[in-house]
Image (cartoon, rainbow, N blue to C red; front, top):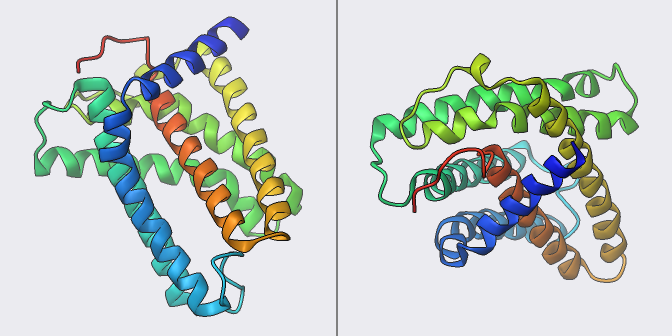
Length: 227
C-alpha cells in the first residue's frame, strides 16, 4: 500500500512537471486573477494583502472572494483534466462543460459535508483536521468521475469505488491534510514578519496543492493518457 501511494504521488508530480506550458497557460491565469481580486479586497479593507478578510467585512466582499476562487477552480479543473487525461485537442462543447461542472458541483457538495458539524458547532474547532482529511478523501476517491467527464466519458460513481483505492486515498488525504495544517502554521508565522510575503507563500502553496489534488483526481497511471 505504501508503494502504491508513493507511485501515485510520483506519477502525479511527473505529469505536472512534464507539462510546464499547460500549467502556465491553463492553471496560472485563473488562479492569479482570483488571488489578485482577493489581494485588492484585502488591501481595500485592511490596508494590507494579509491577513484574510476580517470577520466584520461586508458579506458582499466575502461572497466576491469565494465566487472568484470557486470560478477559478472550476475553470482550472476542467482545462487541466482535459489536458492530462484526454489531450488539448479533445472536443469541448457547452454541453460537456455544463455536464462537467454539474458533476463538479455534486462532488463539491459531497466534499463539504464533513464541515457541516463544524459550521453547526457540534464539534470543536480542532476537528477541522479530520474534516479536511475526510473531504480530501472523498475528492480523491470519486474525483475520477469528474476527470473522465472532462473528455465526455460518463462513469458511474459506484463504479470507481474499490477497497484498495479507498485505502490509498485515505492515506493520501491524511498527508494532504497535514500539509494544509503546515501551510497555516507557516503562513501565520510569515505574517508576523511581512504581510506580502505571507500572501505570496500562501498563494504558492495553495497553487501547488490544487495542481496536485486535481492531478491525483484523475488517478494518473491507471488509464492511458492522450496528449
